[in-house]
Length: 334
Image (cartoon, rainbow, N blue to C red; front, side, top):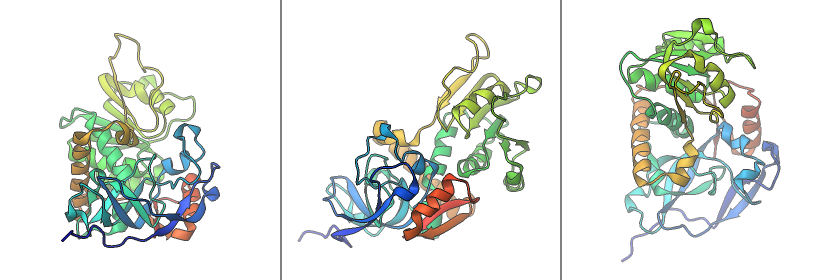
């Protein structure tokens, strides 16, 4: 007797669909038809959808090559309700979180098909709301720190530390033994100090302003969460043989002369792993992700405060994120 490969298997479901345009309010709430699962895929019934800046940035971006009918969204959490060929049946019924490829059906839907290799098991003690808030910012922070040789006592500046990625960066860096300074708006300083940063600096730097020469060569590494231009302008704060890690775009020009401070420049692009990452890279990432989810469940890691809206109001929530109308992590309950 063949074992069942699904718990639920609806013929169609609701999804927010891109039909063109570049703004969240141009998304269309429609019903999309179920497609056969590819080998290696599972179907996740979403409970909560995580919203991220990349979600609004890619709308209308011709480089994405999207066709009308594309379901956007990269982060979600829910339950595996169906499995494709070559997928371990143990995934059925498993609570999971995930980061989806921008080139596949996204998380802005009641159900999402996704490669089983990218799933993160959610521990029993962790709410799916927190799990959905986790993948993009936390996995990005982990990737950024993996670029750096860790050694207790080395100094690290997190530039743009006030956001979700910055919150995880600070905590993960402290756990690795870095002495962490944070650059961000002063409204974030109290909670960052409570997490253990040694110094808070006002920022980001004003447009066109570079790190002052009078205070140069302070840090072993900088992780910049602002933009590529800002990363270049803050680079004078690095010591010789220091490391500059760019999260929001990569530096267009090397930030020092040849045979000068000999800086190393790193690019972080979580979404690129869906295109270029092999099974070993994904195994390392998901292992780290599940360890961090366990830390969230055990209170050893702190997530950003969650701001949850309803599924029907997803475009409003995404537009609020775009225009920075709230402080916290925006999510959508399905």
